[in-house]
Length: 429
Image (tube, rainbow, N blue to C red):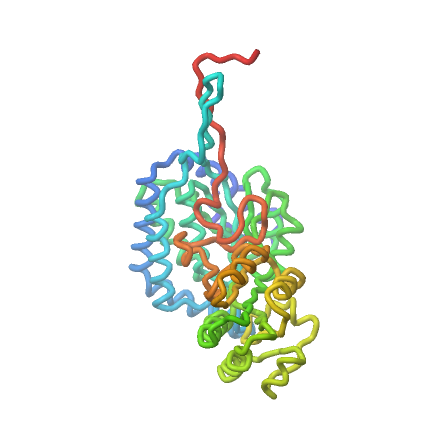
């Protein structure tokens, strides 16, 4: 039975049958991919990137239909921003795949090795995870990023995107499938759940432990909470991107202004967007930075100290310190130096991404060492929290976990390892 042709909406038995078919095909493909050569994987990726460029018009047409429908349904502005494809974003998808081609193949690489006194030679060698399940909302480009990363790391992948981007996802998946065919690799290496029935997500989380080795959610808090609650396999993900910029007393005012504006307003709907800006009470950058934010149309919710700087600043509530807005809104607070900033982030942050702006290297190192988040930056925008910007080609998401993967989840993070031991007849006494 061709699962991609099966109509399942409202039919629990059909959903189960379809998902089982996807799982079986993915598990079989994963065995082939684990042995695939770097040349074959790269050939598939190059062909997929070429197909994305060749079919640009089809991708954009499919996306326009998705955006029109999502607009009619009242999708939020932040989710609409994630949904929209344009010429630049389509080209970025193709380039992202080509960047992954350029990365070293992690599979089979020796992480470390040593020889025991008895002559046994031991190596820790990278291997694929197996089958990765990815559940995501809005962003159709995740289809290309996730498919390419999983392929390069030798994993089969089952993709379940949001219904609002269904047409776009299918169009992108066709390009990936074309690449697999061109390289002679199994098309089941990258599969899309063929139904928008929400029951498919529940089935994927609870009833596919035989097939899926790890699940990666990419979306809002409600999605990630559901995945973490219901999944019966390991999960790599994060709940919120409550990111901070701390402007130190020794910050260059012009730099602080540029960094904070970019961190908040470059794209407000991404998880690396700053949601709180903290100012050292002893510094002199707050008035300039906050005025620039307000002039740019950003709502500022400040504490009593900062409200005195501009009548447009509205009072912040306790809830604002822990809110991920994903909108042109930012919370602002005055703190008593770097240690107070670190304490605030520890109390209210989500362990995602935090930045300090300062010319004092000792203060910077105190912040970088003292903040326990997946990504910490000095004199740079939080919007660099991105696998592509880290030179990883792309990412499946940003993990705030400490187990297995943390920060951008790229090719290397989608691997495990095994021990290879070579002897010359040793037996254990």
